[in-house]
Amino acid sequence: MKSMSTGILKWFYPGIGIKRWVGLSAFGVGLLILGTANLRSEEKFWLIQFLDAVVVISGIIILILGIKRLMRSFMAAFMPSSRGTELIDILYQKKQLGRGPRIVTVGGGTGLSVLLSGLKNYTSNISAIVTVADNGGSSGRLRQQFDVLPPGDIRNCLVALADAPTLMRDLFQFRFDGNSEFSGHSFGNLFLMVMSRLTGDFEKAIKETSKVLALRGQVIPSTLGDVTLVAKFKDGSTVVGEEQIPKARKSINKIMLSPEQPAATPDAIKAIKEAQIIVLGPGSLYTSIIPNLLIKEISNEIAQSEAIKVYVCNVMTQPGETDGYSVSDHIKALVSHSHPHILDYCVINNGEVPSEILSRYSQDKSVLVINDRKKVESIGYRVVEEDFSMISEGVIRHDSEKLAKIILSFIEEI
Image (cartoon, rainbow, N blue to C red; front, side):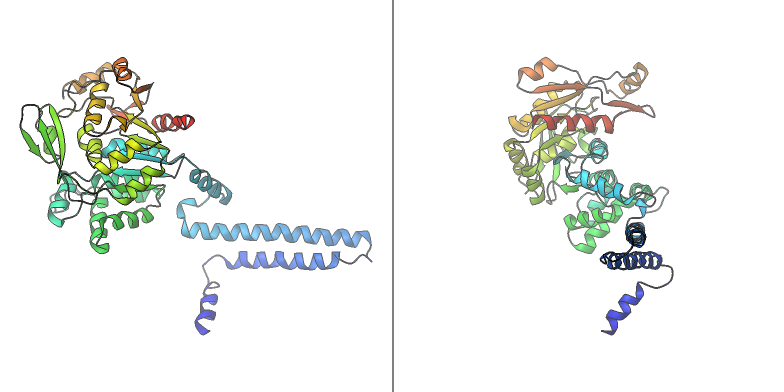
C-alpha cells in the first residue's frame, strides 16, 4: 500500500511538467459537474440557464485543452522527435502508415536501403529480407573475430527504415578512422555485434535494435546459418567469399552457398506469405539479390506467392559481376538461380545520364545496362520503363522517392 502511494506521489514531483495540466483537466471536470448539475433544474430564469450552459461549455473546452497538453507532455517524453508536432498529426500518420500495403523487399547493400528509405514514407508494413553472406570490410572482420553473422547490410536497412532522430541514424552509420583497432568499423556494426552477444541470438539482436531505432517495418536476415558465397566462373575456376567474387573480374557462370541448403528464417517465410508486393533489388545481382534466392524455401515461396513480383534492374553494370549485361541477362541469371515465376515485372530506368558521368564510369569498366525490352517481353515478363535515377556528388544513384512511387503504383494491379 505504501509503495502504491509513493508511486502516485512521484507523478507530482517538481519538474515533470504534468501537474499543471492535471490540475487544468480537473478544473474542467469541476466546471462540467457544476454546470450540468445546475442545468437539470427547470425552475430558473433563462439568463441563469444561459450562464450554466456557458460554464458547461467552458468546462468542456478547458478539459480538452488540459488533456491535449497532458498528452503532448507524454509524447515529448517518450518520443522526443515529435516535439512541436500536433498529436493528431502523429496519430494520423501512424494510422495511415499502418494501413499501407504489405511490401517485402529482397536484397542487400546500398541499393535496397535507398528503396526502403522511400517506401517508409508511405507504409510501415515493410519487411526487408537481407542477405548475410557478406565477408568483406567491417562485417567480415567482426564475422571472423567474434563468430557473428555479418551486420553491415542489416545495419544499412535498419537505418533506412528508422523513425529515430537524425542524430541516432548518423550515430549508427558513424565509421571509426585512424589507426586504432576500431578503424574501419561502423558504430552500428559494433552495436549489433554486442547486442548479439548480450542476447545470444542475432535475430533477437536485430529486433531489439529495431526498437531503439523505432523502425517503420522490420529487417529480417534471410537465414541464420553461417553461409559463404562461392562463385563458379565460365572458365571453370571458382572463388570463395562475397568480397573476392568481383575482384576476380571473370564472367560468372553460377553462384552457390556453402553449406548448400541453409534454412530460411521463419519470419522471412511469414512475410512473403502475407505480402502484396515483393520487390527484388535494386542491388548487386550476384552478391546481394541472388544469395537470398539460393535459399530454396525463400525462392519457392516467392514463386508460389500471388503477390505482385517486381525486379528493379540496376542502371549501370557492375565490374566483375555484370560486365556487358543487358536487362534480359539480369533476368536470366535470377531465373536460372531460382524459379521462372520469381518475377512478373521488370522496372527499367529510362532517364538520361550526362555523358561526362558515363565517361567517368567507363574508366572502371562500368556502362549503362543494355535495355533490350523486347527480349524481356519475349521470355514472358512485363516491362515498366521509368526515370528513377539521379546524380549525387558525381555518382549515379536511385531516387528513393521516385522508386517508391513506382513500386506503390503496382497496388492497382492487385
